[in-house]
Image (tube, rainbow, N blue to C red):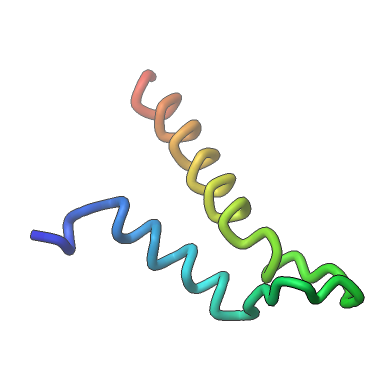
Length: 60
């Protein structure tokens, strides 16, 4: 039953972003890596856009 949970799928997808790099506290001198630093934000943004598009697709 857990395979049908969309939040579990979203968490695995966000974890995929985080696996590409792990933030280490105190590592202030490094360059900003968008995938490592903003993975959850990117995953949430893409999911939000998809929901927005589906909302209008179903409203027609």
